[in-house]
Amino acid sequence: MFPFIHIGHFSIGTFGIMLWLAAVCAWWILQKNFRRSRIEADAAGVVLVATVAGIIGAKLWHVMDTPGEHLFQREGFAWFGGLLAGILALLWEGRVNRTGGLAMLDFAAPAAAVGYGVGRLGCLTSGDGDYGIPTNLPWGMSFPNGLVPTLPGQRVHPTPIYELLASLVIAWIVWRRGATRKPVGEITGEYLVLTGLARFLVEFIRINPPIFHGMTNAQLASLGSVAAGILLIVWAQRRAASAAPDARSPVEQAQPQP
Image (cartoon, rainbow, N blue to C red; front, top):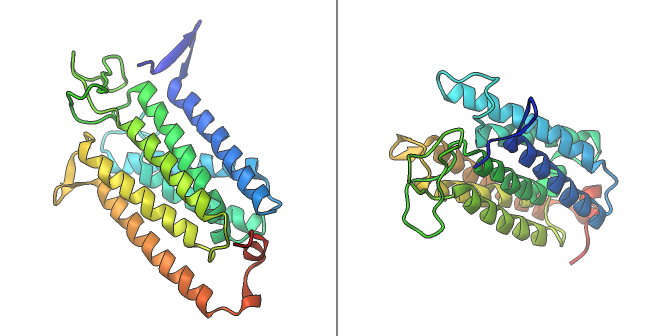
């Protein structure tokens, strides 16, 4: 793998390049979602704020969770910290753009899934230790020059690729679900459930150590994501069922009819 691209005396991290590409992909998806629902909002600004918040949150969570790590190391980002910070940023952006916080989360769900998957390719190119346990499968990969190198000759599960594929499936599901009017918050709940399940499953072949009843820190966070998603779906459906037809938000009214 190639953690850095060297140009003269400068070194550019491939993780950063893929993170930029992830933001571009997320912007494109979010902009198409806004246009599909006839929403006037700044997709580029939303993605920029959410991306910066996600990076900061992911780094802070990793530093708090990993003794001996510090903020200015190039490697080390925690998925759950990025998710929480990104959600908070999108809630704020929903107020700024007058869509409503939960509606903004619904619009951003497909973009977040695609952005996360593409961003995982940065973990692959840098070999930062997000790969899996050793395997003899034909698609196993080796990271001898990674930031966290594998043992000589050792082949491991390329879990970033697995997560990319899972994220694309999740993005397709929530994109299709958003094509018809849904209670505000339901798409976000479905995203939290699906992404939590995907991360919970991939952790079984990741190299992260278990900390509680055989589960890793990320698996515990994933269960929290699934639980929060289920609660949000139930709340959104009950709220919609009890609301009068004219009590729908402007965002709900703007969404395409089934």
